[in-house]
Image 1 (tube, rainbow, N blue to C red):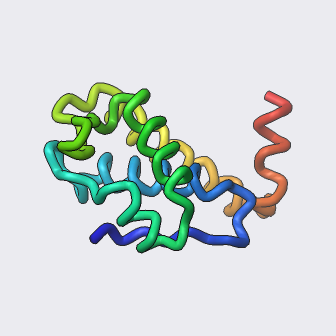
Image 2 (image 1 turned 60 degrees about the vertical axis):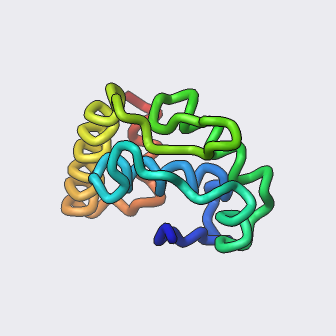
Length: 118
């Protein structure tokens, strides 16, 4: 099915981890427009999550324009991904920023404090 790992030790809640993992796969082209996503219950079982957790991720992805829900027809990757390019670029810039901060010796646990100061 979909290759996603949810880290139970992460500070990010599972619905957020799932949402971000799906966005990454969509933006990177691993999930092409029109690709049918697994049903909520099936993906929840596969990932060891509650169905409501997966449903929340799907709902947020739909609100952001990454997926389309077709009722009993399931959920598919949206054919028009206007926000995907912006998201892809934001991820690239974030990775560049994190790499630059690591290069000057700033621990990853302190990076957000610099963002808060800007």
